[in-house]
Amino acid sequence: MHTTSHPIEVRNMRFNLETDVPKHWHGGGRGVTLFFDNLSTLFPEGERFFIASIRAHLSEVTDAELRTAVRLFCGQEAMHGREHERMNAMINAHGYPAHELEARLVKLLGFVQKTLPKRWQLAATCALEHYTALLGDLLLGNPEILADAHPEMRRLWNWHAAEESEHKSVAFDVYRAAGGNTPERAFVMVVATVVFWAVLAEQQVRLMHADGIATSPKEWIKLGRFMFGEPARLQRLAGPLLDYFRPSFHPTDHGSVALVEAWRQGHLAAAA
Ligand SMILES: [Fe+2]
Ligand SMILES: [Fe+2]
Image 1 (cartoon, rainbow, N blue to C red):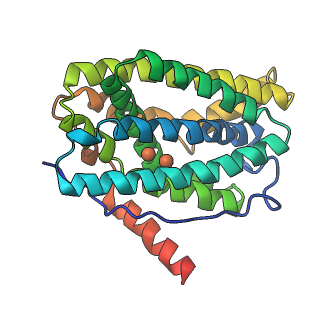
Image 2 (image 1 turned 120 degrees about the vertical axis):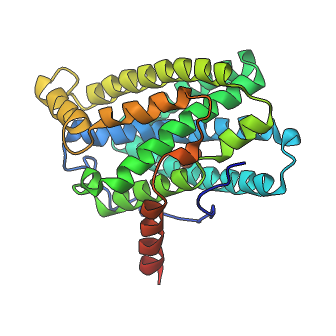
């Protein structure tokens, strides 16, 4: 059995979001700020969904170490949810429809919880946790992505990135303990990918519309360059995403322990 590559630690972080952070907090452009804001609106409800889908299978987890990891996973995701809820209140106060987007997500996830079998819901969590782990590694490994961000935002996103990497195996290991199989999780990954990118694209348009830039080719080109040119080059996630379909795939096959360790050292030094 694979074990978690990093010890999972619940860190009760609190960011100064009320006064400090400007509306366009990422210097890479308004569209770039809004792409991160966009992701943020998905986290509180999304992560509550992850926690619920894992807890629904807790009776099938007999391994004591994995049960501990589940408890720490829930603790980390609860902290992420709390801080992103605060961030979303800030986004809303900046004049964007963050609360409206959150309410729409509540409806979508409510529908999923009512209609899909419990283990498919857990498979969806595994699929999306692969995304968050890859995006987290991308952020930690490419500090240029947040170089032009407000320092408090950089701190929040790096913290979330590191913890996503720390707990990336938990949902997957619970899914295996619950008797999950490759065809099922592969199918759910395809559906989750379509829904995830469709929701992100639609929300991006809505947020840019609220900023009056939804029809600005200049802003879209700037965002496209940021995402698919330097610094993000999101297309490099294609390989690791496809690897999810390999029957012997495990989340620990990806990412770098050293990157998370470097973040942890920086975090400890800053706290000292
Ligand atoms: Fe999270
Ligand atoms: Fe997570």
